[in-house]
Length: 211
Image (cartoon, rainbow, N blue to C red; front, side):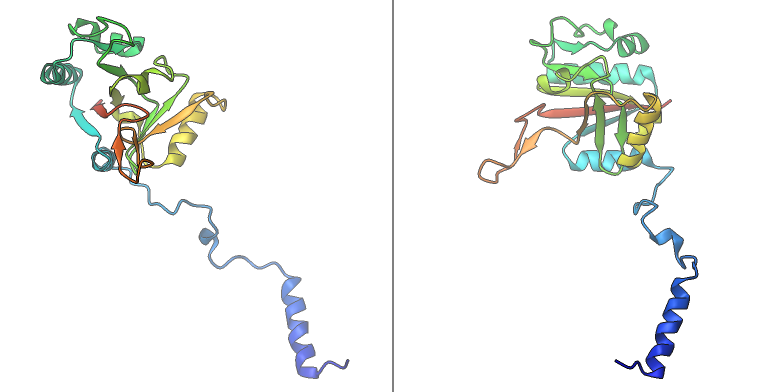
């Protein structure tokens, strides 16, 4: 089949174009960057908004003393007599042992549990927990109320930021289990009716301590 001069000219130009590498006109549009804009400021507010939207309770503490006062007030309001904490760093840093309701029983009799966390993801209001923490896997989901104590330096914007920090913290060897808790436990499997507290705590509090 004979190719017309016009068509041969077009094919020649295509072959010449393919043989020469050309820079992408929009190199940043190829999926190398996150589609979400990272905000360096206001992570506390963003986390609080998303966490509250998911029925979580957020308490901002300007000091360790204010944290102690808030924990005492919450325990009195809820009439708790047994709150369990097995994280040595928290017990030491905040002197939680001075509170009369701390570790008066064990995990099985506790009305609430206090743990730390790895990170807080502001964009989704998510707590990042891992098996490497002293609280282990069971405590955060065993008691009916979960109290999380975190510092402002543990706030990150997105999931990718949390994973990268975990890799750095554990020298590339991630913990055997990483869980992402976003508000109280819930399910809608039963006749499409939302039920809270089925597979974990009915209430989740985050106490964020400003450093």
